[in-house]
Image (tube, rainbow, N blue to C red):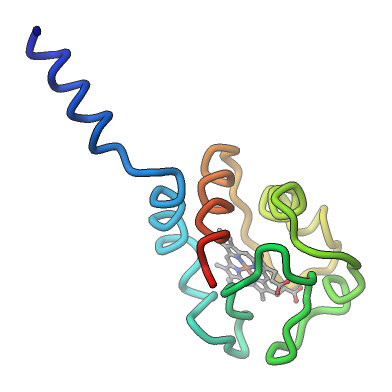
Length: 114
Ligand code: HEC
């Protein structure tokens, strides 16, 4: 095998899973606000996947997010992370994730947070 192919195979083998990519993005972009436990700044995201939107009792959500019915599916998380303000006008979450692949990875990671 040519060295470049060996290098490629090594890279693919070492390539972390989608959730691991998401963990890195989460650590850089989200963890500053979303900690292990809810704080006045943001709710914890433990168990958020498939949970009721704005459903935690230990965080005071905006009326905008509280008004949303239903649970967090992958599709709704994608819409929220793409544009929180479009998903829930008036939400207190201001940051968005513009890259679809980054959103998919973060959502995969959120599914591992229990
Ligand atoms: C600057 C602080 C901040 C950052 C950074 C941030 N968030 Fe948030 N997030 C919030 C706040 C505040 C809320 C509650 C919003 C509301 O009540 O309207 C929230 C709510 C959420 C919710 C809904 C939680 C629930 O219980 O329904 C999800 C999901 C979420 N954020 C995901 C993320 C992800 C993923 C990232 C990183 C890409 C991120 N957030 C980065 C502040 C932040």
